[in-house]
Length: 95
Image 1 (cartoon, one colour):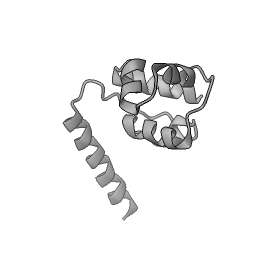
Image 2 (cartoon, rainbow, N blue to C red; image 1 turned 135 degrees about the horizontal axis):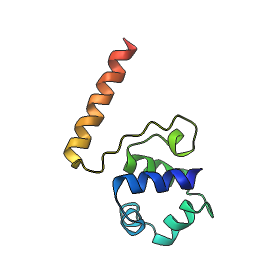
Image 3 (cartoon, rainbow, N blue to C red; image 1 turned 90 degrees about the horizontal axis):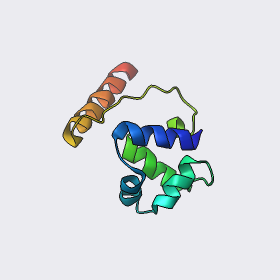
Image 4 (tube, rainbow, N blue to C red; image 1 turned 90 degrees about the vertical axis):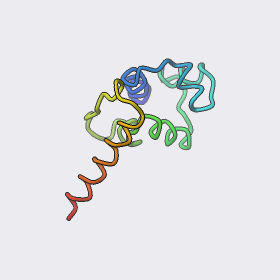
């Protein structure tokens, strides 16, 4: 499941295994191994992967629903605005 979720997030963002490897500072082979469930990333790396894709580790580990937004056509600035909006909505919901 983890490998499939990493692959899904990567493809939704429109980045290659090489690009993800460069972002995370690992080899392309590491990404390939994760996506094929040959090895698991460390806990620290799992957190970094989640941050890159703006998802929770629970999502990557298949512990929460698959509601994911495709933001691949948006700029980094637009994605940041969406994150802030989501945070505001969560805060308002808690009140």
